[in-house]
Length: 407
Image (cartoon, rainbow, N blue to C red):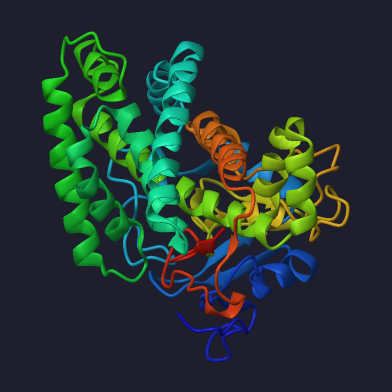
């Protein structure tokens, strides 16, 4: 990726060519910032795919497009829409490509795995996993790479527990997920990894029929038996949740740690007032630009006006949750990390039918990591100059490649 963010002068000057820079730390994409303030419903062209797409950046417009059924995810599949990655992350038939009522049917199945009882059990398991990882960190001694020893294995262990993936298979899951979620691995490698992961979950779900277990593979097997899902839908759900649960939380939790380590006054407040933690996590979710570019687009099924701009039927439309979370009409001083923010209706987990189904688990993991890490290591600090921290390149979800710390 390059750092070019200017309009493409070889084509329509009203289409912004978005090369999507590899950004460091918590830097906000300069083109996104400019479009939010100057051209909030604009047209962009990304590095892969064909043509252009509309990009919607303001908070209320983002919510409108996310909710309105005239914008279809299902109509995206099979079209070579301009996009960041050379491939689609969801599989055909997966919930990411579904519209209501099919999407609603699939979401209801997933909700069974996130019942109040299941989340209480997952919270207890998360604390056990975190305690073991921090024991290992202590044995390792300083300096240490927090990504390798904590932020990478923690969410991988949690989503694998949720899914019913045995511990011995977690390295395979990590390898496949990293390949699929990368914009730089190449289409063939990504599709091959997706196929291998799909075969794994086909077998796991197949072994889970009639077991009565509460892990998600068994819930999906029961849904197939009940004719609520077909096998392709069940496998697509499993792949998407496994990838998202391991990769997104890994990077976002590392970004949270980095944000606190580089905002010592915020960290001091949080340590002095542990009751502030849920509010602090919400503000970190709003503040951190957790992904590069945008996720999956939608297709306008008819002409629709958005923010005073007519989007023609058949056009692709992206929404930016990052810019929505920085909209000054909703968030006062949006570029500031503010733990006292009383009103914080952020959309870091999305909005509408495609709101992240694992948001409750992601919050649990973030809260346990941030509370336990500094309880065990009160003198934790970054071990190298800021400019020496390596950030992932060619990534869809942003985060540090390594996070060297000492104490």
